[in-house]
Image (cartoon, rainbow over all chains, first blue to last red; front, side, top):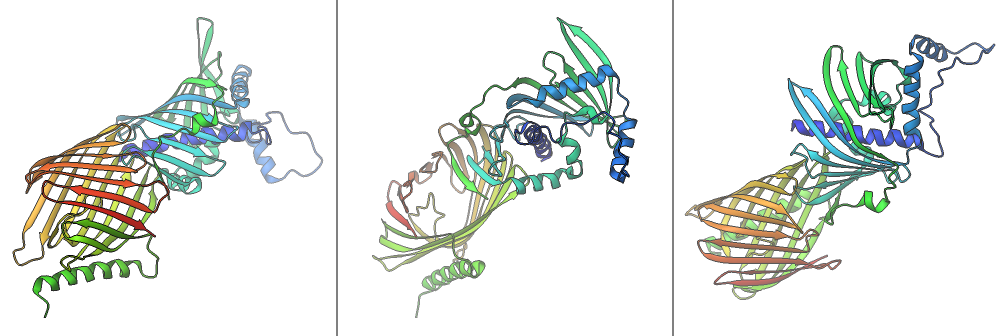
Length: 264
Length: 235
């Protein structure tokens, strides 16, 4: 059953990416949660409230070089205008000195508020397809073992998954996954190959986590994120075959095997 | 005075239906149906009831719990047949297992078809499935104990392989009290189910057809010596 947690973690991450994109790119609410004003707030004669004071204190502590800020800004800009995307995600988690790998193919349509994940590895979830329909607040799961599609409310599915993974408290951090401007960011490696520069960023994330983010300047879409907690390697997530705005149709993303449907 | 076999039969039938009704309390049954068929015992008619609940288990799993059963009466020899069961199925990703406890005086139905009356018995059926995408394997087992004075015990163990291609195909071995091979097919939308088994007694075939958006299922069972056809009307 250990693979279930991995699969769930990968799926949740995928859904979170989807939700993050939704909130970032939504036309009616442009970049509401994503844009972070790094400039100092305008002076005001009014007494600042405690929250603002704390915010300012935190922002003053963020040390980021001009080049790092530029890279962070480029990453933010790259994902801001995305309407849909496809990508392959490989999550490698280090657990009890063993590598556990989850591989899935993800399709996201921000416009139609749909996210779809097809699992390839591990074998315990291979062939499963999960379709998250944010508009109807439903999750459709194709189960190869019974050859049926199970439909459940997204709220229930998320709640159960959150409880299983105990990451509910980290949701705020995960929803801004690609917004690194909130943290101390340092460029620790910069290599150039065939005209493409590959940056390795060190991001001081909250709760004693350090993320090493690799991003190339040809797409500005992160292609590898390695997470350390203290000195301990937690895992790596690789994002490959990323296609931004491929124009996925609703039919394509909703396409599921023609099997019996059961609702929970 | 009723003969002992009649008494045990009626008692079993009553136990089954009391269990079905008591377990459900005031809740309505999810599906009621009226089986109407013709077989070795002549024309048969009766009542079937079933109830099943499904709930999520984690993000990639679910479980089903249910009960069901039927009671039929044959015209020709005034016999009453009953069969009832309670089951639980758990699916977690590509792994599934199920357990069913049953009792009755017909053989465990294959695709809703029962050909023979049998000594009153109680039993259990269990199954473990493991898929790897479109292919998989599993193990099923059945054991039943006759409630009659002889107390005959039967069991079978059925390892199988299964793959999905325009439906689910399953090929199994039958080991235990009898030896044989089996093949079953389930159409993706469950409209057609087919089961072919070759065991000690010979070849048997069962088929179940569900009519789209119609409250009927049609079934037929055939062995080398007997045949049964039936319609189940759901209301």
